[in-house]
Image 1 (cartoon, rainbow, N blue to C red):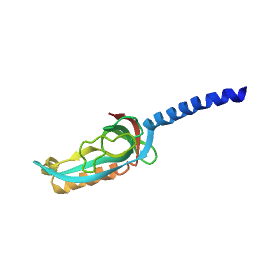
Image 2: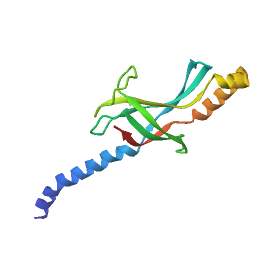
Image 3: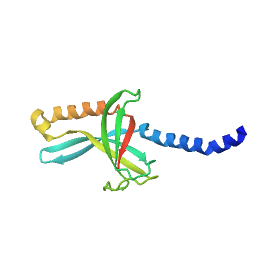
Image 4: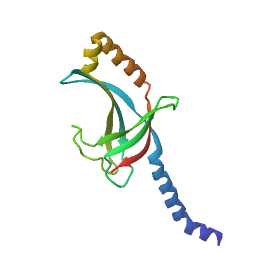
Length: 148
């Protein structure tokens, strides 16, 4: 009698366990990093510090963004942001479909030509390198939730 009740409960327990595992994907530590990308605008050279991660969509809906806390390797919180995600290799706005992978990123900080004009190119380079050293500590992103 106990075995038959257990057999009846097994599918229910399995479904609850899977639901708990799937919902746990919202709070998952994933590798991420900051890269320095150079650009230009009307004020001159721009240094963009871009936080990025590769995301597998484990939800049942298409994902267009991911809310993250970014941390160093010791789990020290360095900041938080909303990353914009795309499944398109050209970065076009194509949401990441369920079960697919996509690239998520956001510009954390910009240092533009206004700094260069105000401080000179040597100081601008020093600011860019100082910020890069600081942001290179980012290695883990805790995904809190998704934008659909």
